[in-house]
Length: 207
Length: 75
Image (cartoon, rainbow over all chains, first blue to last red; front, side, top):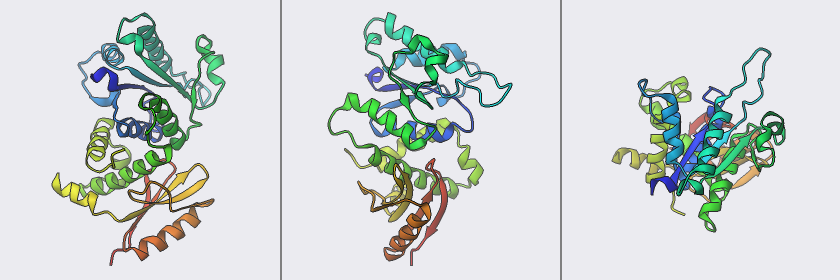
């Protein structure tokens, strides 16, 4: 069932976060799951809330990164989309019938205790802390999905090594297709996911 | 697509990648790092040595996994 393999990723869509998002997307695909993210398709005519509701309803797993809950600069607005969509996912899990009652949620944050002050309703929840570090984020997502896969799941270092190989191959491929370094850095997320999916299917050793 | 696969399969590359304890040199396809160093510069020196010895490529990655530098040592 697609539902059992879908992983909804709720995260910031800014230039800084792409460094965290890439390994998360790769880890999800490498472990045989399917990332679902609002950026996967660009359709200006599609209502944003309808799209999010659809992604939540279609996904057994939810990864919600609350790392933008604190403004970095004076005058910067809090980013409320992530906690809002986390609430929607919780509601679906808590009130939904099968299969939605089987949903699993991973909350990510930069630091361990900040979210308890900002979002005290979930203060008792276990969260994953990535410290804004791509390798740590990859490890947290791997550990979350490994609970479903059980023994035999490749270790964090193995997935990280494969991710770096993908990045090298993708760099070569995009460069050969006339992408500049800036084009590569800003490769649209939908395209990036397609490249990762193709690489995992063609190149990644089976585990 | 076949051409792309050929490129992928023909790789004999070493990668300098971040690791929890510093910087590792990993051969493409290997399960484990060849060696891990505290400093990236040390990992680059070792990776260069290995890439030269094996007529391969050396990729130096940033903390994000993006490519900082790529050098081919193919003869």
